[in-house]
Image 1 (cartoon, one colour):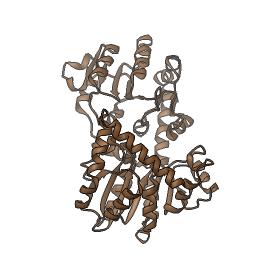
Image 2: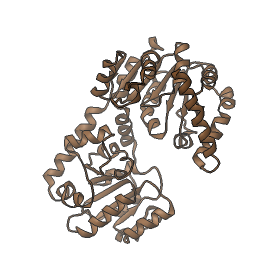
Image 3: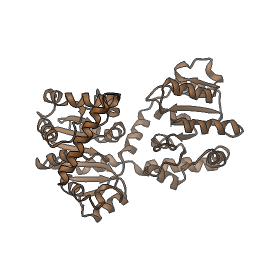
Image 4: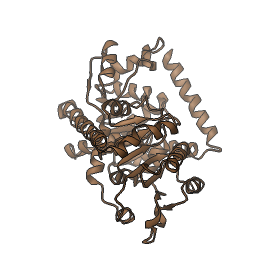
Length: 417
């Protein structure tokens, strides 16, 4: 009965996406991706030899998968790699990645689609990342006895697995995964309490990924030229939204005596309208694309492109992470791995790393302008000893959480494939 209800819900969702595709560009991309997946898969260089399948919901989950994917390829160069995405934000960015032999949208999770997809792909092993559970696909993998793993997973008591109606879903966790690698003790205890023993703590592979980013990051000559001759504090605003930018502009104007004298601002949305809005808030700004040798007098640098932010945190003393006045904060680890204390808005509780860094003294949450004016940012900018302790807390946190990839692949040995 539950399978019927689940699959009926999938059909309803697919219908909703097709209707939305009439006026929504992302939905249109998804529908087009579904249409061509099976034809492309039939001609793809996967499914004939040994194949590993990585499924990621979106771009963020793919970034979590990359350390495991690349380490697996290094250990098993004879395997073909298939990567599937659910969201256009992942597929459209990584559809041509050299890290995979084939990349596609995952067709909607109907029994017919799942059976056809798995029959064509014929994976030797499958990995799912963090939380994207598609139960018809999982069932088809189980029926074929294909080793299937979930990693970087987090479980909470209020998830549907553990509610009164969740028995059917919980059974799939018990039956369909060879092993579940969780991020923390709470998740492990929750699974074990519900009779799932094939699980262990491996941590979050994002730590390994951001460490790789830092190791590979090149210096930015244009930004260094803009900062040349300046010896004051620098704040990096990462993935900011209008509420974040308004707070920073207000506090900067009111407290120029201690507020960082230079700001590198990387907005989450780089539409022309948003960029102009930022320029009105910060009249002494310059866009990165317009930097010249004469831009040294500009005190705010607006990053008007995608992909640079992670490497720019090295130039800051402290990072303000955006999104906390909306649905949730963006990635703090890219700043923390450089040893930069972080400040962010109030909507952070679903992010384990944010809770952890607050507890360790390397990060702080604000509820508005007054918290930023009188809180830790001021202390960090005026008390060198307080800053040193916060930066050390960030470094220790990263060092203690590296190694998830090695823990995962040490259990996924050749005898388990």
